[in-house]
Length: 68
Image: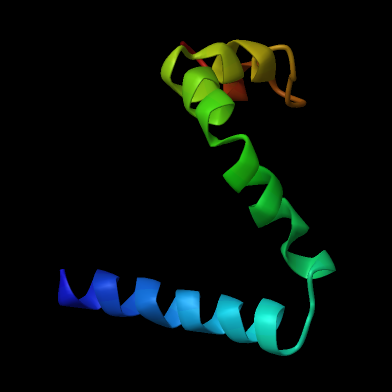
């Protein structure tokens, strides 16, 4: 627990310095989008709609496809 909390604290510090101190907002736009749409991401993952959507994507070998 100490290791994961330390890692999250260091990640928070790194993102704070990157965005607020140096002003690099473009490189963190994906994280900003995820923060704005966290409820819809949760619904898609918990209802397996993302797996159903990805299942239409086939690898070169059919046995490597995602099974539900």
